[in-house]
Image (tube, rainbow, N blue to C red; front, side, top):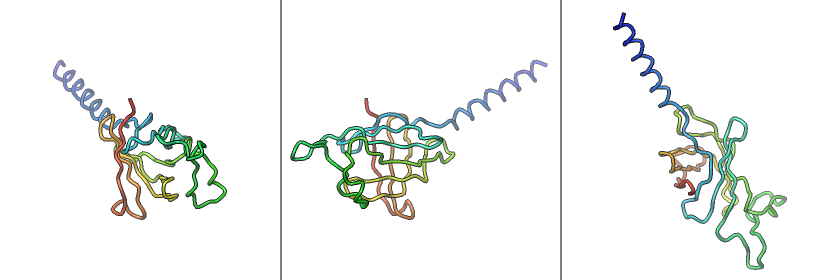
Length: 147
């Protein structure tokens, strides 16, 4: 009986550890962009993730006014302030516990929107990949969790 109890306990412990390994890492929170010129708040948006540009280092233009989304291809959106702008959306968990994919990434410097995915490397490093068509044709930016 004690051997059966030990095997059952070991099975339960092993299953629990395997499940913990599959738990989703948490990308929500504040992230500093690669160049440290911006800060993005990643938050849940329903069952997906989105990210808003909540701070930029050089937020004001030459006239002292908030910088705007001037390069947006939609002229009706060019008056939006950059601070507060949603730049990530529709990021869905991939199932591996550390990657969110099938989302979109907006680059206000170019006014272009790309397909995107984010991958966590530990608790404090996030890799954002923006691409067209296939991830092979894109660029990765490394963000660090804000302190």
